[in-house]
Image 1 (tube, rainbow, N blue to C red):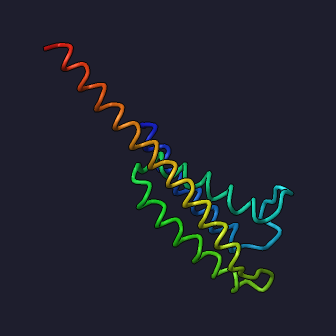
Image 2: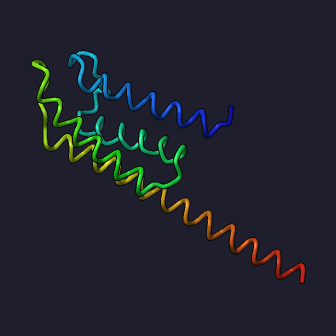
Length: 126
């Protein structure tokens, strides 16, 4: 089993876990004590980075996770002990956006570095 396959399995399992925690009883939600704003931002930031390692198309992954985060926040209006919050959806989406843009930056920098390194080696071999 490759590392990329393991990351993909863990990412999907994390998505299911996030869904269960998000729609389950409020006491299931882990809290850091730093405030729900930081919990949403950092949680989705880390979650998105994990997904971007498994599927290296950060802008596509980021868009999908942003839609998921907003949908999940809206669905939290359904359970009787939960409520949806527009600002929680915004903080979640901002965490996703920050991670996706950071991953895109690193992927582009890596490609540029590899292409310059390959061009430099081919020029030295000629």
